Image 1 (cartoon, rainbow, N blue to C red):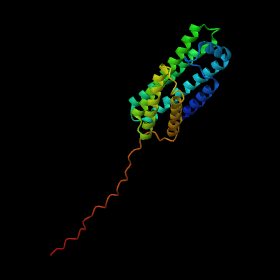
Image 2 (image 1 turned 90 degrees about the vertical axis):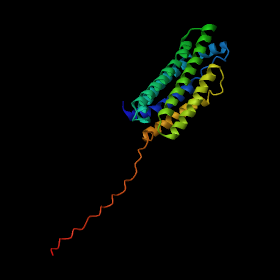
Image 3 (image 1 turned 180 degrees about the horizontal axis):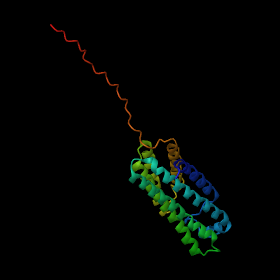
Image 4 (image 1 turned 180 degrees about the vertical axis):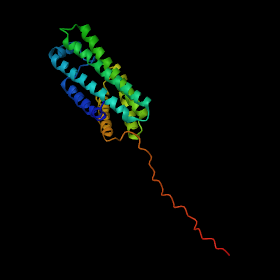
Length: 224
């Protein structure tokens, strides 16, 4: 895979995810069931289109993570594999979040129990996604050579993990800042990767010029 193309995939991921978020705000389980049913009945096509955009964003994130893995710690094969694995988990979890909304949007007059079950599934897959993001961010923290990336990664990991836990508890306190923190991490890392400022700089110390070794002046032997 072309490394430069993979790095630019991070920007495509962010743009598509922002577009998807602006198309439809999926209701959560704290919304009354009758309102959820009316929402999906009225905006079914928009919801399906938004989830298709989300699927495309997931693919771009996978490409981004795959290429990024080589830049974070190019000296370690194990680190490259770990970043790629956790990046793949994020992409798979992101794909899974599209299944419940599409199922509800395509359902013909879903019953209360069906709407409740699929809405609950949407909340759970969302929590799983942020748990995967926390793992990915922690892996960046573990393998990154740059201090600023370690700090940024651990902050995103903490917010994402808290967002996952609160999401299961149906608490919406981090519903905005959690995703925004991750969306900030991706383009920042993409810029650093494009500018080749992720890997550790080799310590290059100027070699002092070798002092010219004094040469003995050979004087001709004087015969006496």
